[in-house]
Image (cartoon, rainbow, N blue to C red; front, side, top):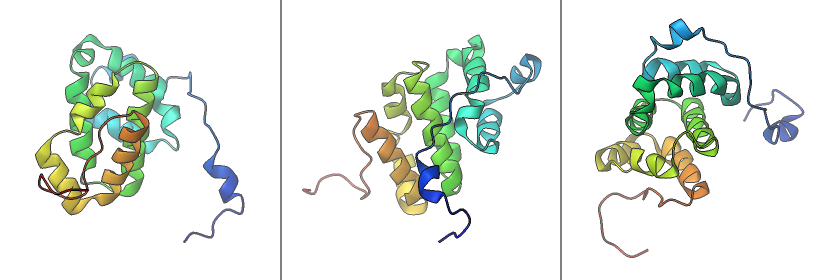
Length: 153
């Protein structure tokens, strides 16, 4: 329970507009891999502030072709991280879908990996919850919080 800001309830519904100001020079952007761009996003106070660079990065031909695989890498990479990173990765994917940079099915595919889901269930239930919130928003099937097939519910 944090006692930091008095205006905490206001803070929750602040919508940060997507920044139009690039923070990374193209020459550097071209050298970044999926992991580096994700670390950059995590380093911003709000995901929205990183989006102009993410969009430029995603539009590079060498990345655009592999966006579904990149989403999958991001999910894998985030699966070992804390709640803050989990939330930002989900925000990032949501915005990419909203901006029509990736299709929602690519997000579904990125989290469909059975092994990955097992890891999330065992080790990062917070990320799993964030992902499910994202999937629900995209009207995609949710990740079961219980392993194994079968069983009514």
